[in-house]
Length: 416
Ligand code: C5P
Image 1 (cartoon, rainbow, N blue to C red):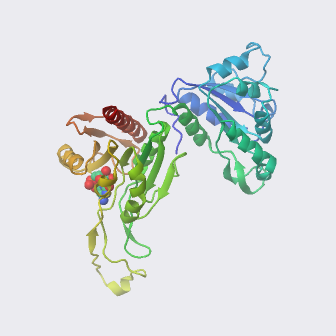
Image 2 (image 1 turned 180 degrees about the vertical axis):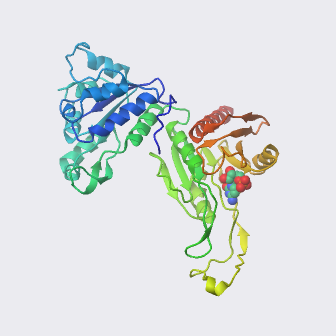
Image 3 (image 1 turned 45 degrees about the vertical axis):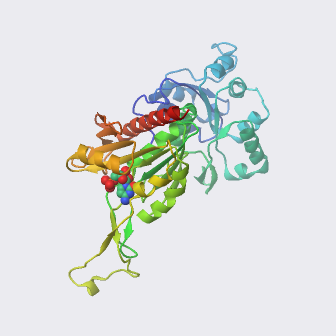
């Protein structure tokens, strides 16, 4: 997922984040986290341990947050600064969380402003460990990590990858800044409109093999579906994303299943759809697949100047899974049309049993495949339409998820 420091946006907007920084080399990456959270509309109070100030100067954090960086429990900010920070925080996130920080958190130490604030808060606490891979693997650190989880702290990472100082690679790396930002958003949205709900999203293109190296496919990048998965996760849902081949990385927190063909996608979605509260069919499924897949690479020398491929229709995943969808669950579809957009889209909404359909015009250069933006009309099953302005795909995703959550709440209200 890309971070989106491009303006205030729910769930970050207007929320208070205490960003704790302990003393590890990865502290330099957390300046970016402070900046991105601030640009997303958070009020960020950075609290550094003394060791952290050896790696990054408080001034760097002050420059990006526009607020004083706190290091001293007995500062001019007042003796009870930890009480104010802990009480007012909507979330506390510590990045990097060193081995020492984990140990002090486990023992309830209050020997600096950061650990004292951890004790003085009822807000969700995220700890993002980062250290050398041998330190992370040490049984004492592993034990402390488990105890932190048992205390209700959420551990984010560490990642497995290249470590500092030529130490090769292994688990111990700080998760990327955008992942930290995303997890802060999730913690802030944990009581969001989809909290405790299960959402399934299909995304991307499908590839239908012609031979071992060639396929029939389409230009879908997966961006719209990935954005929907992320939005639903930020709104509190447990999310399963079933995607065809896409260059995008797995969205944080989302259970991502990667498939190739339409038939693979149908197999992979049946079970999650049967448990889903909301299913969003955003995949651009290939309508046809070759009848025969050649066992070896098709050679031009053998086919001559032309090649005939016989194609057969793929299953329609939305239709095929209609019968397994739970009663009162919400189904959202997409339609990309070149003509008679609304009439064709409404027919699709009805024939595939969608509650909401997101329609876009394939001839609009700012919408559809391979662009960051989308201009869509939302068609509801009560016959109403809602044309949205040109938006980023992430903003479209937020609106779609918001509407799906509202439909789900109405359906549940009807049941109660
Ligand atoms: O391709 P079409 O315009 O019919 O797609 C409309 C909707 O149906 C989309 O939500 C798409 O994800 C879904 N679909 C599907 N399986 C297919 C074709 C489309 O789930 N084989």
